[in-house]
Image 1: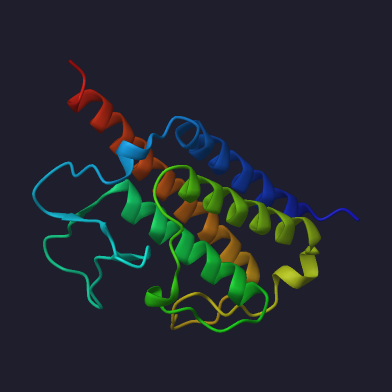
Image 2: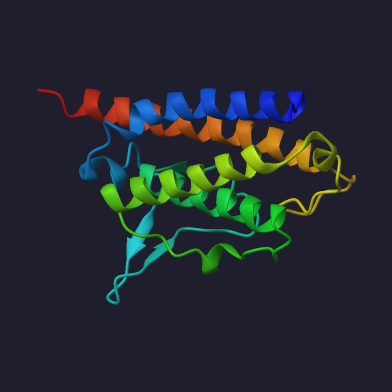
Length: 176
């Protein structure tokens, strides 16, 4: 069945993902923990193999520059939370996100989440896009599933640009 709004949201997601995929294909494990300056947020490997992100309940001032590892964790957190919410699940606390590790493990994880979101978009009809959405964060005004899908597209584009910029900066900074 034709679904013009869903098709537009899917097209936007696919466009943003294609820009992201350009960088995913070129990421090296060494890119993930590279810190571009003295004030960074990153992930910290634990003895048990888990990863713990730098985190604050309120945004610090100045805002730390995130590493690719942190940004990929953050992207996985909010995309997983959007999937949870779209499927009626509870809000996931950032501390509950199990980061799979740097390099290929993170890339595979993000691709899986992207595929799951794409499948959700493929299955939804325009009428369902008007349903109230449980956003992955508290919002003052009622929002729809279409609003959340639009936010996912915008957030994906922002995170893709951040990861891409960090990857390019590291390549430039480490070039002989």
